[in-house]
Length: 310
Image (tube, rainbow, N blue to C red; front, top):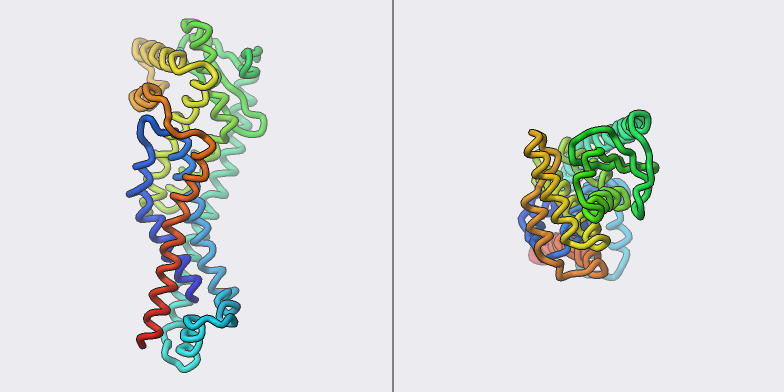
């Protein structure tokens, strides 16, 4: 029961507290992949903690802990055997019902979203291949070109993902056009479409949880910044910035708005990231896991202290 309570408390801290410190990781001059990895890993840990709560109630891993010569475990076992914790069975049932309902909701919505994502992605890819013309895109791979005057490109994720671009990209210089295509291929290599889909599914499943509600917007912004970072590494910051400005101006003149978060992306491109990829992911996992671990240890400590003072 103690393990289940610790996991549930960790999920609460991550779900309602993480949006207070995760945005601090997103700042110009910091590799956006750090913030992206932190948001995604925190979402995954949140779901894992919710899943672990009901499992801990059923499997009772604390029984193996109580077999160890630990004073805290012995105290809790004695208090339970002597009937000093009459509320424990009711707490177990309540925790299992609440956490189980949340987990069931997440599994249902995420499963539906993933199946719909795969179905719509396959249909969209087949359609653009029929309507467009597939030509080599240089170093980035094949590109499906559409006869459209807008200065825009987008990517379709999946196992056989592709980049779709309009003929309007001809207004860009070759280096700028290559930067646009590299940006889109960065989305495919980084599995950004799946990350956005997962975030949107969590927001739909648990909109009352700040981590889920705010995470979908943050992930959408951060995948764009991360793709800009990859494109800048391949083509240079100037090429990415100039392509973004020219395409945005072209879209404004034509009355379309195909480019999102332009101001944020230009601000990030204006400063070179201080942290590299080698440190980004371990640091992101630390930022995500440490609050959950601290919460779990605190719960065990509070229960042990209450037992000794009872």
